[in-house]
Image (cartoon, rainbow, N blue to C red; front, side):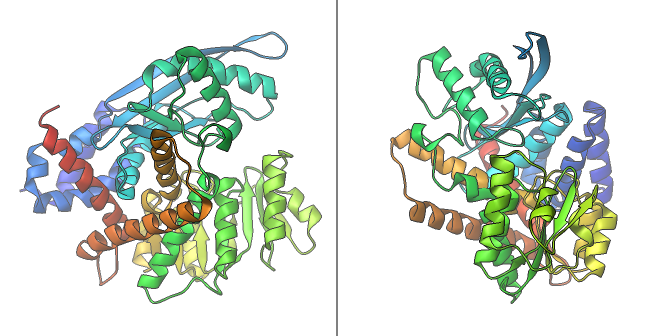
Length: 452
């Protein structure tokens, strides 16, 4: 049998030939395949059924035109997509992203990651991802409403409560979900749990807004506990300033850590004294209501500084939590964090660390929680929202908080199990653990269905 490296190179050569010009998708598959191939050597039944090859090929990719009218009466045209990746263990499930960077490569990478993330939650959810190259920044509320309605006018025919259940992502919050749900209801004349992240008034779930950020900190807490450490007293660098970042900072603060940074596309702010709840609430209001820039924080709070065009990874910290976007920690950033004494990384965004950066953290024995495990809290509560919609019930905050905490603890346990078996130097490899644990459940489902 060929060596693991030879198998990986052959697999990736074929994948890149079938999917040219899709670097983000190649990166995501490469990271997973590198850990799955040794597992396949020990479990040849999956290789015989070509499970990895089938898992890396979407069930379908739908692209469509989205026409809408701006406030000046001009006709505008964008491109919408939905990647339905895998429904072996449940309906397709994954967010919608509205951002100029959206293309097939980005959505396929996100949908592929979602396959493993959703599997890790233990809930019956397949994987999908979608969106459009529409930029909501600078658009009026009416323009955003018209775009969302036009987008859903095409998307509605591909989704359903038992088929495909989208949610929000970058550029798609509660407002956008509301507009799309309203249009779906208008077209189909049905009220069903076809979207998650809905308002509480029409089938949404408590704790959904907090879930991704809180979950990433719960996962961090479990990793540190397994290593005999505690989050209390640790300093933290957090990137981003949306729901994930602000709620990660909030949960860090509640557990006794000191979050010190947040960022947006303009740069990052550093508050050496650390954020208080009052300061975090101020940032939430800035971003959610006033639609302002993070630089305004430094003008408002004494002692804070703004660093234009930079990311927060130069700040000395014990914990790094990238919560902004993909590939925001480069190899150089990882080495800088290591030299500054970082002890643990928990990814709140999707694939925020380049593969070389991940390797650098692992070589330095930094505790590293990959996105597909660490940020699964958001989709976990989306899955709980689906359950509430199906049963026509609504659970309380305490019940949902406990379910989220337990799900993240269970995800850690699954990753730890395989991470010990496929780790190195007595170190738990959470990357391998997350990939293999997520793969095994989906693979067994696919095996049960035969060749389909």
